[in-house]
Image (cartoon, rainbow, N blue to C red; front, side):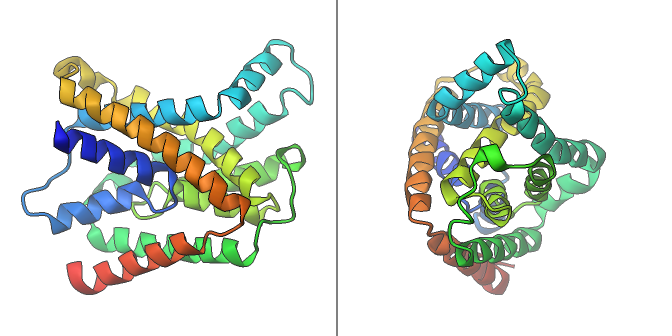
Length: 257
């Protein structure tokens, strides 16, 4: 139970803070003797917990999207269309290159380099401050697709999904909070799609109590990490995360590989 809750907290924090949950998992596998990952069903439930967190935090935005789809207009459908367009790159890369991506999760060097790459993106976004202050109403379809392309990069372990998409949003002129808002809304179809693809494992495992506890911990930690990051971005400061990713990436290259 303790291990499940601890892993749930770690999942919730690293899923939304721009530090790469996949990179930390790969490095943990190389660092901890006998650790070869968690059961597939447990991973699914942890991701389910983070999905609950992001859905609950942005429930007002999601409710607005649902209402707008019920009475479609050009302006009302704009955000759903942007999210669909932004989801296309990761979906295509995941389907077409799955066989090439899976082995990367057994390569600590790739995860370390991915963390260094994440640090570079975050540092560049920090140098740009909070973007030009553009809201999501000013985001274009090509810009949404490009942000989605950055999300596709996060299929490589060590590249943070939230870090890459927030940085891309800032590069496209969004303010930090609006870049984060679009990034987190974009995570909903990504996480939900992964859950659907992997949900078959739950049929064979069931729902042991420690697994449920881990999912609850992931939801609570996920909510807290989203709130923390949104507050940090109000001040336009991604530098601490850039420094953290750079240190972990470089140190792991030097000492853990």
